[in-house]
Amino acid sequence: MTPSAPYFTPDDHAIALLTLAELRMLEARSAAALPPHALMARAGASAAQCLLDALERDPDARALPVWIAAGPGNNGGDALVMAERLHRAGVAVRVCMPIEVKPDDARWALDSARAAGVAIESEPPASSDASDAFDRFGWLVDGMFGIGLTRPLDGVFATLAAHMTRRARQSGRVLALDVPSGLDSDTGAPVGGGEALRANATITFIGAKPGQYTAQGRDLCGTLHVATLDVEPPAAPSIALNATPLFRAHMPPRDYATNKGTFGTLAVVGGDTGMCGAPILAGRMALYGGAGKVHVAFLGEGGPPYDPPHPELMLHHIDGFALDKMDALSIGCGMGRSDRAKKVLADVLALDMPKLLDADALNLVAQDDALAAQVAARGGAGDPCILTPHPLEAARLLGTDAKGVQADRIAAARRLSARYAAVVVLKGSGTVIASADGRVAVNPTGNAGLATGGTGDVLGGLIGALLAQKLPPYEASLAGVFLHGLAAETLTGEGVGPAGLTAGELAPQVRSLINRRFYAPR
Image (cartoon, rainbow, N blue to C red):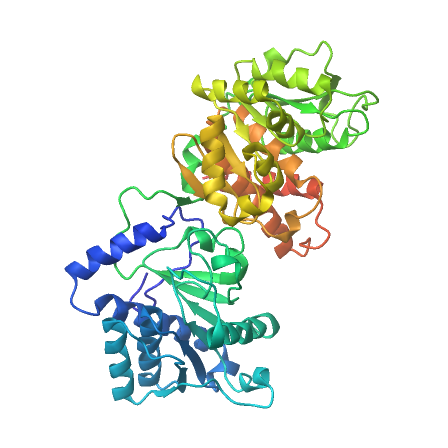
């Protein structure tokens, strides 16, 4: 950070994601150590600078006034400080404050803004069409409610949120302070099942929040900037943002004196009759992900003798195939739920090697207590499985429904990791990676390009390849999820997505990312 920009944009940084409880503790500690109103003054100043920087990059908006909605609490106080700073910088500002702020800090901010001559009104801009009324402004700022909102938006604030959301979707230039109003900062779901405002950018204070990176949070926050306000994060935060520093040290060196055995042998197990494509996709990704050798073991009949685009893949029927000779296993894609599949999964769980369970392997575990006990026993013995469910599969494993999982994705991932003594990769927007030892990370990469068939299969192949290369299960999961999502983002930046991106296109891009990030010549 520099004095001219007292905020930063997280970019492959393993920062802490602070829960509401952690934030309240930090706020209380800072308030006791700092002069009165210091945190609010810093927050408003950081927000003002963020908007000034945006105006500098946007000549069309510089000629238009800024409109700010201020709520009745401390978020409204932050907005008032911001308004005063912009006003003193020569930016035309109008503040809409439907209900006068109440907390002492916010009252101080209100008095200061009034003394500076900031235009403050109680009604939103009037027009025959409320949407047209906002067209006269360059940027709209949501300073209505921050963290800790306990009920859905209603009344005038719900109306203002709807107008700003419409503006964000149609023409942009909506900035939220701390969190978009109505968003639960812990879960990424709207508070109380209501609606939450959609912004194009958010400047958040003290630290980023988990709900800004998972569930609906990524869509609602837009580009996220963090202003720490010079507050030190907790020594041991409960949740981290997934980033390269969390797994870089575990990537294997690629010395001259290595061979294919150095980088492990993976078997992808799955593919019942008529479903051979899924394990082949996973196997191809494993090749591109750096595994030394990759086998595919089909459960069903009619599997191809070899893979023409990738004859390096070794294809087999599972009968007589020596799974116990592998360095790691990825099982479940396209395997079905037959008695045969159940028997194969039980045999795999008895083997002493790293393993990942996906797709039908997860569904079999969910419906069979003996298999579930085997999974938990592996973790209890110090050999945790990796489980990679999407929300519906997670719901089956937990005996709930997908809506309940999505309402608090982090809590669901923690419950899964505890129940199965496993590393859990709860897929979705803001994939959550949770370990039974308490470590939790939320992944910031990925986009709508991954919303197509087969992308989960290739993720399983990639994490399996990393397991074969001796990455520990948690770090293999972090690396696989991060690179998988980043590949989709990179391809989208090149015009290959998000619409029409196919799962098979991810593998070559993942290979490029691995080599550029970890094995570039020095």
